[in-house]
Length: 326
Length: 274
Image (tube, rainbow over all chains, first blue to last red; front, side, top):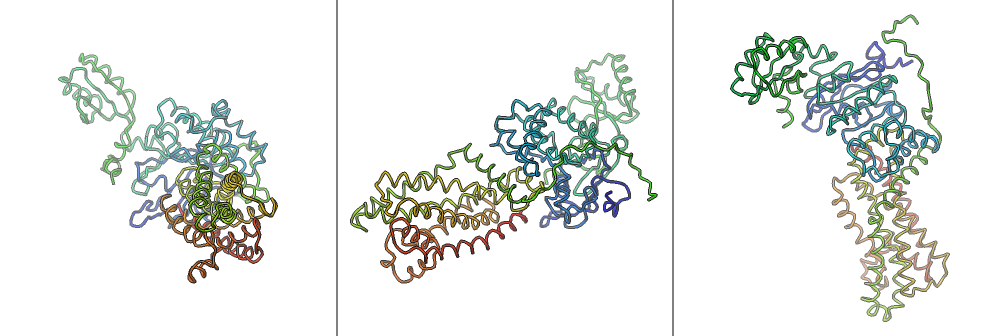
């Protein structure tokens, strides 16, 4: 039904951006970025601050015109058919974009009315969403009295009023504490179950890994890697064991044990801590056993995904934080 | 068609009320956004402090400071001044829409409006309409002040109301110039500054405080083309007697002209601002 979308790719993409370029004076925000996701999937866009994630979202959300390249949503051109595209999308920005002076209810009803719902329909939809997002009681209060997590949920609810096919979540968990972050993650999983396509930008590999079907790593306005989370983890070396011996004097010994387990050199990125890349859970179990055998007690021992910083170091040879400063 | 599709066949989604476009969208959307603006004003009534106090300050100041010197009698001067202060106050109040929009634009909620299928002008029209409350509050405050000081509605209430309606309609048209400023300039302070610079010749370069025939020739020429001066004379004519029609024609012509020029420019500037 969306034949227009196939002018670019053969597959049925919910959204598709090809060769996006956006310049601000001398700064190039996007330098030929490609992004796409099949219907009902989550695309994670992973990158540091200033990589161009938000610019790409704004183009796909019709808020910004690209200087070059094209963006399609549901087969419709985001520039030429912007008005139609706006009926298909929901946007949740990096900063909660609700009106603080209005109540939760008033915020959602307003958006319903702007989406051409009749007043009674808008109220019904708002009530339904407030209930779903655990805001039923807070609905009559001004949004400025909400906690950070509640505000973020209201923001998410606001982007769902029109039952969009595609929803853009621009760093939806930035600044949230872990339990609130899990709430947002569960909401996203629920959306996907309903067949919604999600574009999620994030600075955390952990978040992209937890939610995304595919991940595009963005740096300096272009894609530097794309694949499923599993593929990406293979490129960047899967998981890492981190150990902190209780006795700092046994650091070298810990390092030797972990090197032995992994077969790759362990390093000590900060004082008193040893890290080593490993291929899977089995090596973690082995590390635990060998440390116990040697009688090395630890105050911290974890198996974790590489941080964004490590992903970037592997992919570009540069620290992500260096670019943030620019 | 024999094309193979790679994506799995989706079960048809139960399609609940996905809203369909309905007619008169721009009117409905603008009114919904005007209501938002009104709710915000009611929630923070201190926003109305300026329009409440300003007419009182001006009337009291001018009547007792200058009344004796200019008219020889404060009551007579009140009769002369008050219709003009009505126009001055309401015209002054029209600056605020541009200033508050300039602040509002930087908030995420305007991004959300822009991502919705509504007319690009709806958020601007909504704000301008919502700020009509400011004109009404300014008028009420002035009316109470006038009553307390003993202003005589020589021609009765209906012509006075007509003067109010004319003034508010003109301020509505003029406010689009300040909306444009709000779209073009970066900081609310700059909007306020530039707007007030234009406000002084517009409101004081008039026969507000002294009869026009006492002014030097070059200033009289300005008064003759200044729409605010005409609005003041029309308001005077309606409330205490004097020529009305010729002044109203000037006001209407200027009002339509300002609206026709500045409203499209403001919407265009809003579209370009990202």
